[in-house]
Image (cartoon, rainbow, N blue to C red; front, side, top):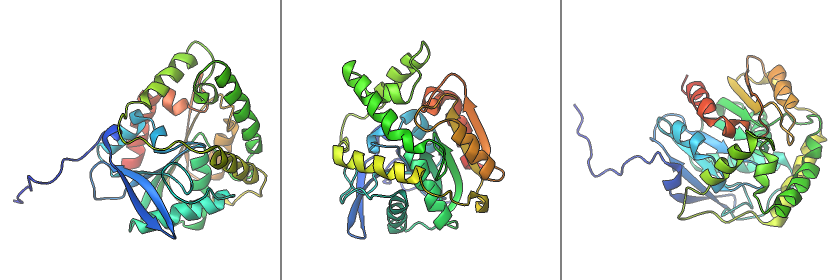
Length: 288
């Protein structure tokens, strides 16, 4: 019978309370948060366009962190991470790899959303042995149809949001209808649940560099995803205006044995609108 060390700090399973830490790799100091029980394979979260540590929905993170070691991070030049945003998705994947290795990790599960999914795609193609399980949400493959149009959609919705004094994510992530509007408001409110030690917002220059990298990713030759052997879960809403929902089906066709979940009457943020349905699916997939 082992003695339990009562002085050990309790396990944090609420993202709102996860401390922000830093680690330096290749001259870049990465800001990251971790929560959930240590030990076992961690789940590393890859965040979306313009997002910082504060943009993860706690209703997705917290259920996963109940039983898994969860790590979120700011890529180079974003939020509290130093350096400048790279001009390509591939370079962003190289930075993510440097960060993961600096933490001493040699096997991870990946949870990615949107731009994070593009980065995860490139990471797993280049370092297949690093990733055990892969979750790709609201995303698509390198060279995917209309990915290069993300910038136009994004700028239009930022303008629409500015005119109505709302968060651009309400337009970009959700349908503007009777179900989408309240889901959007609820999501934006959940992102405010953390009240202390909040991250620095992304700079305009960093955001514009990300958009250029996305355009380049959309216009480049497709990667060979048929080589992927990782169990993969793909999810999206059925009406994604940012990264068209058809690209989730495209990923599903390219990645052998992948599972696809499409939520009805929802957009790019379908997994956030349907967090009560999606979180248990993600938990089950990642603990299998």
